[in-house]
Length: 168
Image 1: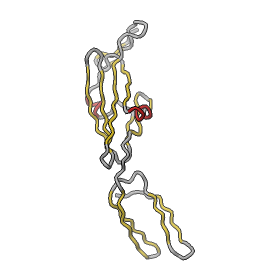
Image 2: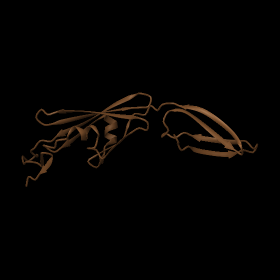
Image 3: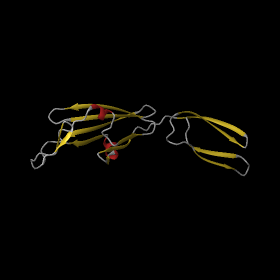
Image 4: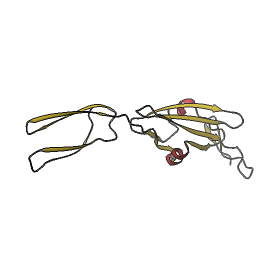
């Protein structure tokens, strides 16, 4: 595995070479060996990078809006879908209903989905973000079906068989 390191190297007034290495957050945890060859002299150092404890959702874009701040502040997010808009399990479980979702570097994402179809449908998408160190954080996104009538009692835009129906 090759990683880019931010390095600063210089030779001091005594002729000693010093190298400052800054580990980037994108490096996964594990045992690393760095070997440096300067003017034909080779030296190595081995170190262990501890597992990250970061377990956050870094971006969450739904319907063109990045809702990551609301999501991270509350760990729950409710958004509304048109009446009759049915999702299939696959587009929820693989998060393709979102424009984007990313988690902390090195973290894993597990998605579980449930559906409550009493009266209006509510989809509950449960995200579990687990850090490299094994610490998990749970997030819940509720997709709630809107009432078919708007505030004035008119039939709102609705979906039938997955397609929008014109209510003009």
